[in-house]
Image 1 (cartoon, rainbow, N blue to C red):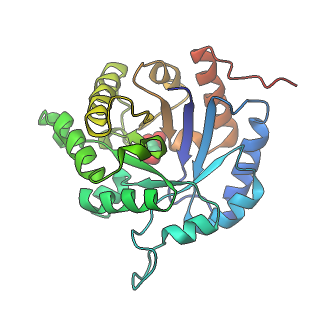
Image 2 (tube, rainbow, N blue to C red):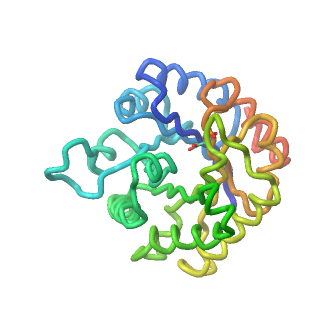
Length: 264
Ligand code: 13P
């Protein structure tokens, strides 16, 4: 993968003012880092997206939405359409985060509709997949990941693979009571995901696979060094711009890219 992807989903935490402050600080903190081989993205709440896009340039920070309805318009009270997201300058759409699957009971079939709809509208779907603690204990994690990918990407044109991103976020690793996956476990599951993507979209498909779930300053270097990990998708540890900047710099140093220091 010729690019490194580092991003955060701010969940239901930041108001417009909080988001603008966060983005402005993050853009300023990371202004010296070349974006040639690094994409930084932030996925804040819907209500913040307009102001969020105005306050930092897209070359500095890509913006995503946390969800999307799968129709262009219609009688779908409470849903946000791809046209509305395009209008405010969103590029990425997060689809199937574990909280949407397990708290709001979304299905693989629904995630699939959203993936296809995002691609149809020139958005970049970030499909999140991951097994629950119970599925892990039952020894069916690989099967679950393959099902989530096979249904989630059903009907997708492999020619659009360069716009797809996958986040592997084991449900048991996410949030305050989450335990981060060990490096060996993460590498093994990322390898399963990569093999499945090659099967579904062709050996040449260049789909970044990001790890998420209790990533922090202490484990980011070990995780990013894994050969099958192309980026990190971070929650709590990235919500402070200085702390996120610290993680970004640790990761770049670990990869030895110093991707680094922009030529002045
Ligand atoms: P945490 O890093 O807080 O576990 O959250 C991960 C996540 O859900 C990113 O989408």
